[in-house]
Every structure is written in structure tokens, then in C-alpha cells.
Length: 257
Image (tube, rainbow, N blue to C red):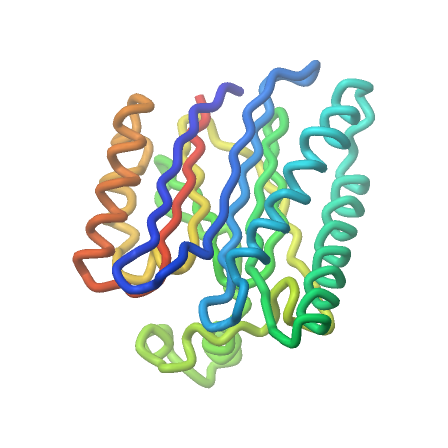
């Protein structure tokens, strides 16, 4: 499998800092090309959100650059080891950020949506309400579940999806890394589709656009080249800003070939 990737991140129209962070890695390995992407959204109303997202990004990137590369070099990669490593990173970062917050009398936290692509498989670890989408010839599929109050209410039949879109509690998270006593990340495994686009985004990117608009600009047919991929990310970011989204806006996309 081959990969092409790009991203765009924007402070948005209202906030004074960009609390989103992201990283993308594409490497050659004995197992073939490997891609890794991660988006973290520092909590909007919490102090030092940009610090929380940056710290988690750096921890995952260090794991990828050191531990993961060592695993694939020695053909020691296993799903069980991946889950263990990712779980330990999440829990350690939750403790570290929690201690930092307690020492400085503040709260800070971040979402985490990370995706690893190895051979023909993808692996995801997820906390919060950033999202990962798969766009292919079969349509759009959301690969992560929002860990929010309204998502829980919808799943339990106490709220409709339409009500959830406008409910004032739609940004209330059930958990995040750094500000939750207990964090239970979701792990997702699936089969990569050739010619698909995988998009990782903060919630500010997706609030004001539809799935159809996303496919039109960063779907497989719109992403024939790296330049078109970048254009689509920037176009949608500006569209979101024109529609008065007040949050930071971040999207990273990886296309399989």
C-alpha cells in the first residue's frame, strides 16, 4: 500500500490560540509503507489546552519513531503489543497532565484520535470527539464514536440526531486525556481500502459542513494529486470559517494507493 498525506490547521475566527495539534508520519519498513496520523484537540474552555494536545502528540510521535520502528524492523509487531503500548501512553499522559494541573491549580485536557496503517490494516485509538472518517467508493464511514453527552443520549434513544446537532451540551465530553480521573480509550481495527481517503479532524472542522461537502473536496475523486488534497483541506477550512465556526479547525488526510 502506498500513501499520500497532507493537512491544514487554523486558529479560526474567535480564539486567541490554536489548541489543536497534529502529526503525520509515512515511512518505509520491512513490512512495506507505513502511515501514522494523529489529531488532538485541547479542551476549549480549559486552561493550557494547547499544552495538553502538544504533550500527547509528542508522546505518540516518540513511540512511533522509537518503539514502533524497532518493532517493524525486527518483525515484532502485534496487535496485542500495539494496544498495550497505546493504552500505556494514554494512561501515562492522563496522569502527567493531571499532576501538572493539580500543581498549577488548573484543568487541562485533550482529545486523541490516532490511526496507524500497516500492510492492509488500520488501527485506531480514540478518546473524545475528534473524528476519523473513511471516504471510499462505498461512501463515507465514521470510524470513531463521539464520547460526548449528546452521542450517549442519542445511542440510548433519549435524543434524536437532529436534536443533538443543536443541543447546547453537544460539546460536553464524557472523558478526555488530562481532565478525567479514569480514561477508557476506544480501540478500532479494520481493513484498509485502496484508493480511499482517511480524514482525521477536530470537531471544529466538521460542525459546519456536510458529509457530501467533505467528499466533494477531499474524497477520493477530488484527491488525484497532493496539490488537490491540500486545496481541499484549505477550501473546507475557509468554508467552515465563513459559516462562523468559533473553534480551532484541523484536518489531516491520508490517501491510500
